[in-house]
Image 1 (cartoon, one colour):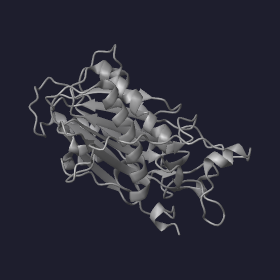
Image 2 (cartoon, one colour; image 1 turned 60 degrees about the vertical axis):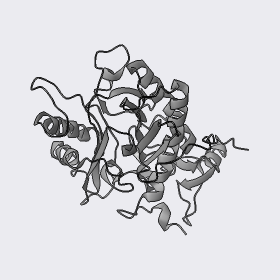
Image 3 (cartoon, rainbow, N blue to C red; image 1 turned 180 degrees about the vertical axis):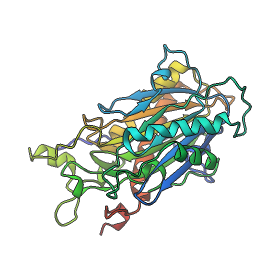
Image 4 (cartoon, rainbow, N blue to C red; image 1 turned 90 degrees about the vertical axis):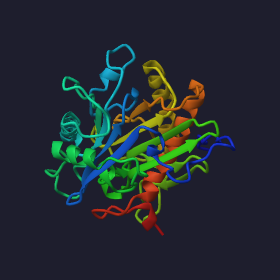
Amino acid sequence: MTAVLMLAALPACAQAPADNPTLTAVEGILVGHHTLAERPTGCTVILADGLVVAGVSQRGSAPGTRDTDLLESANAADRVDAVVFSGGSAFGLDVATGVMRWIDEGHGPWARRPTDVPIVPAAVLIDLWVGGQPSIRPGADCGYRAASKASRAAVEEGSVGAGAGATVGKLTGLDRAMKGGIGSAAIVLPGGLRVAALAAVNALGDVVDPSSGVVIAGARADDGSLRDARKLLRTGATVQRTRVSENTTLAVVATNAHLTKAEANRVAQMADAGIARAVTPAHTTADGDTVFALATGRWNGRGDLSEIGALAADVLAEAIVRAVKRATTVAGIPAVRDLK
């Protein structure tokens, strides 16, 4: 019988903020999307209002990234101005240039010196096959527009931004895939600690609800029912050999706690477990799974590092589930809400 990783129950006192259960519930974080509906594709920009310490975990075998090396504990950068997620494969890395230009022009609520160089790590997913017009892909202008829309409002979820062309469940071929998207979730403890996540879900595998082990979205059979990748792989059935880099789950987790750069990297590594709980299989040779961790330090308390990392994994798994539940059908690719 297939073993199922269960989402650890949150403490009874841990709750999602009633007014904003998304990434922007963490003070100092703003999010903006820009969607190119004509294909569809797009980008999502996570802006930092002030000094934000960052780390990264990269366990997928096929990442498409920019400036993630800066976030390694031994390297020099000790802050980021923004993190960028984009569709369009490596072409989408140009989005970061547009975000840098927007910041360099002096936009936003924070003060900058003319000599400051914006630090904007980026990660991309492949959605070029969705919609039949691969020449339409996000660029620098898309990033500029997304940055200009960034706000502290609750994050828009579903088939928007970097999740506009995202798909899941491609083990049996692209024609059996389902719609992925953007999802976000947040929790707050009574003492004031906040931990939140945002995910752009474009996985090769299925999305599973960790609390029940039930497949929510994934590879479909001829009759439209879900195959369940765990059972499919155990039968020895032939699965689709998708090209390297055609899939990726991109995520950012954030906390209002004070963390060092080394601690932020540890939180990113722990949060990565949320992908393994909600996506099966995860971290494959055809996925570029990447998780960023941000710490704003706006909370006066001192959180336990292991607690923050554990909560980050929980809330990331929740964000992944929300991504497919909030997605809508596009380009003939069905969403969860359309299944009978």
